[in-house]
Length: 167
Ligand code: CDP
Ligand code: MG
Image 1 (cartoon, rainbow, N blue to C red):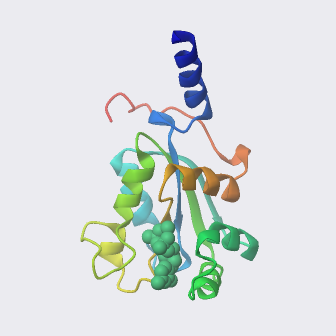
Image 2: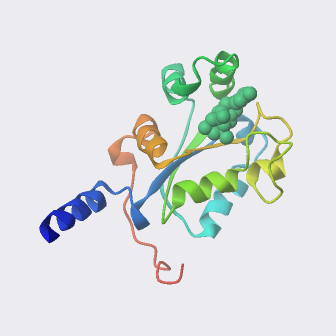
């Protein structure tokens, strides 16, 4: 029985999706870049204490965007969303840390600018839901799907923060 539990534990940790190894996908959308918010947004996750393990600037192919927003394919705004996301470069990132998915998603703020709180990224920088500056994975399962869609394995880095004892 103990062996079984240990094997399951080992498997979970090996997959790298739990505890300090949890990862999330964050993207500064084209409007965030146009509005020169990239530095400010990176700063928030960095200062929170998460670890940056992947970062690139790219103009996303339509195929990636359609796949990324597959769940929303039936929505009336879907084509406009894909068009907006492909209208310029995005900054794609992977951040790592304990509960990083939930925490970062909270740091984004609600989709609806009328209700998202000051102090969140959208709460501080958005007035229009369709131009909301940033994307973040909404669950661990979404992060697991999104990260390989945007990043090749060799583009992600494992490294140690010298300050990890303090954060
Ligand atoms: O981005 P988030 O996960 O908070 O919201 P979502 O409901 O998963 O929607 C994904 C994205 O679709 C939003 O961030 C908006 O860019 C866009 N959207 C839109 O343009 N109009 C809507 N009525 C809803 C979403
Ligand atoms: Mg979402």
